[in-house]
Amino acid sequence: MKTIKVANLKKHFNGIKAVDGIDLEVNEGEIFGLLGPNGAGKTTTIKMLATMTRPTSGSAAVCGIDVTKDPDAVRRCIGIVFQDPALDDQLTGRENLDFHARMYGMPRKDREDKIKEVLGVVELSDRANDLVEKYSGGMKRRLEIARGLMHRPKVLFLDEPTLGLDAQTRRVIWDHIMKLNKAYKITIILTTHYMEEADMLCGRVAIVDHGKVLALDTPGNLKNSMGGDVLTLKVADSHKMAAVAARMKSVSSVKQHDGSVSITLKDASSRIPELLRMAEKAGVSVASVDLHKPTLEDVFIHFTGRAIREQDVSAADSHMARMRAMHRRG
Image (cartoon, rainbow, N blue to C red; front, top):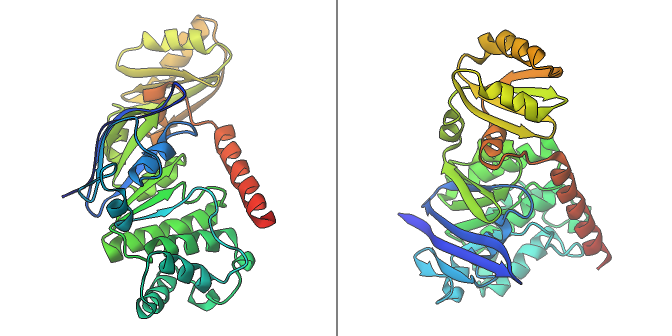
């Protein structure tokens, strides 16, 4: 069964094509990832599916319900964890969950039972009566996930669920996401610009850039589609190096990015001496050579011609920190 169906979905803001004709289907019980850099259109897509903004054109259905024709019914079947903090630091964890449940009109007994259940799922039962301002960043994200489960949604949207968290805490959140998917058979749609996160969590991934889906498949199939191992060379003249590499036999892809050239080819390890001789003959100075199996980063470079740069990640983390500070002041 298809929990989500999207056809030629578009969203324009003052002439800017934030989402530009996306097509995708998500299966019931699947963890599905939208992978791409900031500004790729991931969050805007989530907002349209969650009825927070209307599409400019195209169609989208969640749980078999058209998002524009019956948004209230869609909202009853979904939960969402926002990219920006949305907890009240001056309430306890339990009070945050209770407030959310009241907004959905849950009876008192149902609220109490569900609060106990979801706190156990995210392992916050022993901190339920502490003010949220005393929670760590990872605990707050876990509480937000718990809140998203309160009204028993069939679909849970996670918008950059580990943004701003350290690597160890990210893995804790990943474990909780996989556990709740298994325990509740809930369909999870997450956006991320962390390659490892998409690879670890998602059964299928859509690579999104400039408002378009450039590739969609399982992480394994996407990596296998590269057609060989990847050699990445740091060079002074990437344009000239790319031209040299393109002359080699069995090369399936040559991409320039950030002063490097990534070359995908079969039997890559045995071809390194030949490649270096060709570079030297062409007058290209090679600073370093890296050989590895294809990653989702390589797939992204293959389809977009650029990497999701570290400064993009840092900028997003800085944005998260600013939002937290504003939330505390408010």
